[in-house]
Length: 360
DNA sequence: GTGGTAGGCGACTTGGTGGA
DNA sequence: TCCACCAAGTCGCCTACCAC
Image (tube, rainbow, N blue to C red):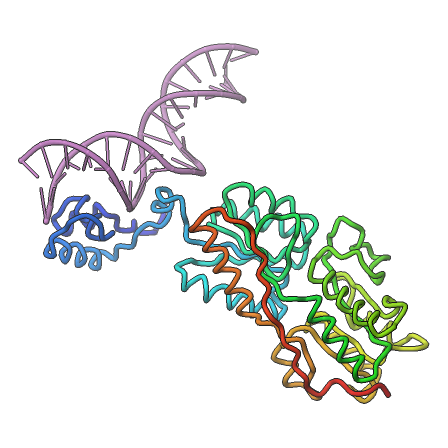
């Protein structure tokens, strides 16, 4: 079987067309050494005529660099990661890098496969939102080797590399404190964790039990929730804490279970905007009104939270800036080599809208 | 300023050799 | 004949060096 694909023009082709040697053509195209203006123009014209494009594969062989970044995100459908990816691609292009994207659905096995695939493609570095911040052996091997890694949205203390996050605990504590200030005492938290954790949290029968959490984000947001409740004198801080498993438990079902309790919560804190959708779905299904019957607060300022009625009060993260900062940290690490790992923490802001009211 | 040449990058294929 | 193993060659490009 023969290929219909025409052979791409190479430097020898351009040199022949321009009537110069390969050396001169190469010098003129790459902009090094000395080339007369006339020869440079002839080479340029020949390259344009032949549609010459430098072979990046061949160039990568020499330089050892592909100018490609691998990005491993947890949930491509989540508006948070859509915004983060926008920040990543903009910052990468500005720095002269292309991006290869992989989605893991918060699954550790899928993450390991994605990391392997991207490394096989010889990306210059990886931005990873890890499905687990405790099981990071596959990333540790890279950090110790030749592929720099920057963690995004989550950080793993055992992994000596850069991480870019927000102050999840502080932001969560602040959000719950605002519900307490509005008079609430029965405040629920609904969250999801990855599907394969290796520590039991992914088991079906343990799904609604509080912790352990495989992701630092979950640990910190729950810690902030508990801290705020403790500070308000609430003894059983886990009575209204519900932890589901990504793709197994529906946040709406978890919320419905909470609303079935003899003393149901008067407020719900959803740890991301997708979970908030599930919470609202369950609230609507029961004919309850926000905020008259139940107050709702979400982590993430997704666009829809500003459009629905009532508009949701949220913890806003600098979503695009998270991605851009991760790329900047990664490019610095690629281009300047080893330096002590940094944990960059960006600020959040609580946005008060219409979904908080005193308890009924 | 220019031309010619050699070496090297990494993954893969091809061909030669030796042993079972 | 089959298999395993190894060396050499392939691809396109960059770079250094020397000669003119």
